[in-house]
Length: 364
Image 1 (cartoon, rainbow, N blue to C red):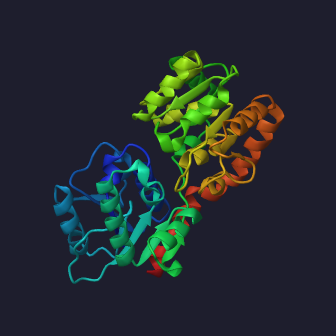
Image 2 (cartoon, one colour):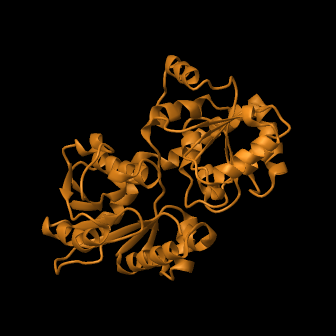
Image 3 (cartoon, one colour):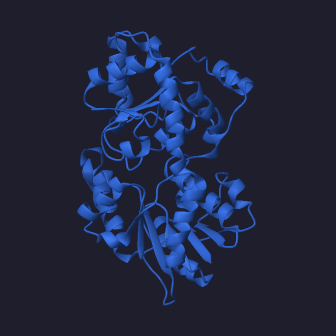
């Protein structure tokens, strides 16, 4: 088969949708090398350069600019006789030629509908229009969790039989056994505490960092936060200053994937009290790193974390504090949960994801 992909996120996004796109193309090209995988974008970039160097992965230039790209990309895929076009981030091209081509779209979440307060009116309108149009025209919709599937059925009014749930995985760096020397060098480079809890993700209101900070207030437990700052950071910083916690919380940005994987392994606990996620890749990263997880009991997070992670009400900082203290002071339980978590997370391994997706392609 010849499978075409919208390469916008593959080439332009450093995390999130970019990682999903790159991982998906990489594992398909690795486990099903007999197919051709073609990425469409206005230009390539350094991101995913190693994947683009594979013999069965190629790049095709399509129009520059959002509208011309959307009006031309589908026809460009048909011109090269692609069998399938896969939109990797909730949208499909707007125009197609008369040639036959099957259409697949991945929808990660509908957070813009569940939490409209985090989006402008204009963004909500555009998102809904794009997602609804893609859902109508796709032959198959890939949902990245059962939670997202339920939302697509309820909020986009899509029949259940059109949707397939195929989970996400994570970057291979989190599955590697890094040397003690490398772990020590990362610890020294970032001046990390001897023991600490970790949070990874954009510092925005939905991710609920403020409740972690409230949870460690009154303890001496160090917190390391890795993620891009938004306006919400000012609210967190204000709380830190008011409660004299500045020295207890360390913020890092622009950490390489290998260094991030090392920091996960160095952490005692990973804490992720997000209000809502389509899936929650950081939880998978933590479980592969054998770091026990405390997460919200909402949305898809229990799907990602499994039965051996601990769950909290994201609004309840006292609940979070008690569970942090329990794990922090109980090494045997941390070890038990990290071992069981590593067993559970194998359901998200590359081969399984590639097989499930290829089954969808072959049926089409």
